[in-house]
Length: 392
Image 1 (cartoon, rainbow, N blue to C red):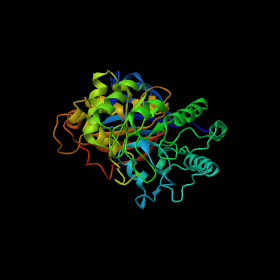
Image 2: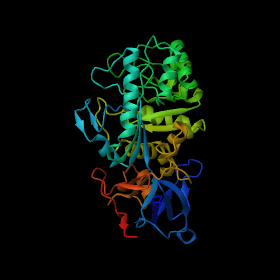
Image 3: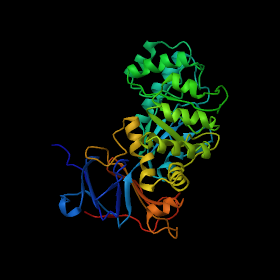
Image 4: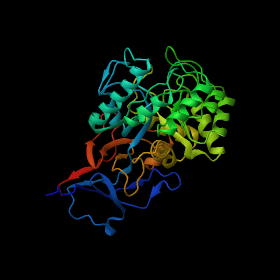
């Protein structure tokens, strides 16, 4: 006997954001997920809501794809030795983030830099976050930092073991564009996506990575184009926006002025679909549970980006650049959502207008793979309205 399907129905949705930058707002007030995947969405009167195992009455709040943090530095479980902090991932979930992507487990004490050791740690990190989701959050980890002496076979071995990411190019001993380009090419050949450290050094052993090296290396993502922490000169940031065809990653732990330059340049070039968001934490700046929401509000309010577009930076844009099965409201995608509303007493007539004025929304619920993972956030300002679980 097969187990009965788990059917989630979310009704009375006031606003549904798609994550799709070309059509960010959906004409829908109801969504159905079956066995953790989106099955249908639209007007409730047109949908089959019978047989639900879980019903959520949204009470008019906004539903969006769960936020994605494109740039984190995890170590193990829900603990970061960088800031001696427990449960930072759970706190991030309370900021509406349901998926995290590692840019390298660089804060592991005694991180091995020999080839055997770095491969072993990457495979182990990929495994332990595959087997354990802190508070239900999806953590894509196991991102080795490339070092001199690595050969094509090493990348083949990593890929065959399940590794799909490289840590930031430039954080290891490989600091020249020619060598980095070769290794990035080997990684790409075996389906491993790459990102590069951009800007001044962030940790001992790292160094300046300028626009010339970024362009020569040709990674899939320009990591923290606004610096992590120190940004490149304006002309180099503009050059990268002009010449890079993939992810232009803006991070919380970077230069805010450079972030605005990036989004303004991307808009002028018709490249807003390449803008993605990360926090670059845990790091020296700490842990930012609301970092993605803060970036959405900052870029919307100071960068004059419509809020529904700014939310795409932290959802669908990242999903497409990172080739994920989450971050978009579409049939077949993972049922990963954040339900949120305008914060109590925040200015603005709607949640979108409030965000465009620089205010954070209040998170009322997160859902991952069709299962409720958190309710009223302990970190965001309190929402005006809250979704409610209804007995089916």
